[in-house]
Amino acid sequence: MAAAETPELSAEADLSEKTQPSTLRLVLRNKAVFWGGLLLLAMVAIAIIGPFFTVAPTEQNVMSRLKAPSSAFWFGTDFLGRDVFSRVVHGGRISLVVGISVALIATAIGMVTGMIAGYIRWLDAPVMRVMDGLMAIPAILLAIAMIAISGATLTTVIVAITIPEVPRVVRLVRSVVLTVREEPYVEAAIAAGTRLPFILIRHILPNTIAPMIVQATYICGAAMLTESILGFLGAGIPPEIPSWGNIMSEGRTYFQLTPWIIFYPGVALALTVLAVNIVGDGLRDTLDPRIARKMRA
Image 1: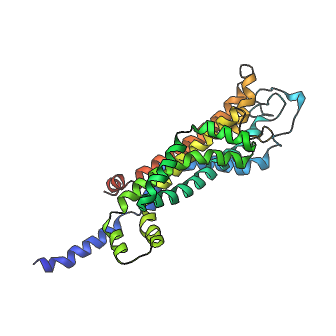
Image 2: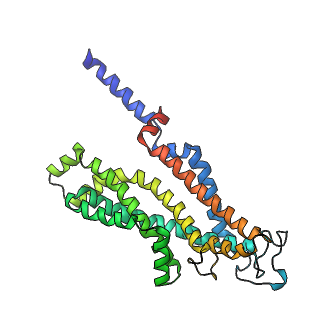
């Protein structure tokens, strides 16, 4: 009787697998990912397309100094008569480039280092002690020190923000690898004589992708905030290149008289970071196996 029921059970299992939504569909169905991604795409589109329809962010008009928002100047003007709307739109490019670059570089370096440290036992202790040492240094102080030594350029800012983010990625990947390397299929691959690079790429790497995607979104948001803090302190992107941080830094002297100089770049920064964090939360809920299982049910 059991043998007769086996084909039916197999057919039901196949049908169940076919009717289950894929991971991509679950991601797209997640409201947080949808609305957060929509807001993020809007901010990215404004940063990419907007500068083609605005005046130069460095164009000065002394006769229009500290003008309030109007139909002529949507976000008003600053103390040099520069259009704040144009500067905010152009500044979005800098913040997005910094955020995306730091997320990609830190994730790539941290993923490779974490897999090696987690899988090769004799490298685990020395690598993690180096990572602990880097985490002990405040990120802002490290960034300011590097910028003071190398100069305030976009590349220096990206490198300075990336270094403190790498240890966090390494620790996350290492924790995943320590669990995965004990799985039967990994032990079977080792017993079959599979070389280390193939084990890391074919068996270890796929298990780290989901948490890394989520971690990358948080790194992106944190990097944009750090870049703005550096700009506000005068240690970030040079003043001649508008970024949300240095726009707010220039406007703080006139805040009581012209609060819009700080308000609009602050709102743009908050909306962008909020969108990135919402997408990250949605991806975490979707890619977490326990939560994804409930969503499929």
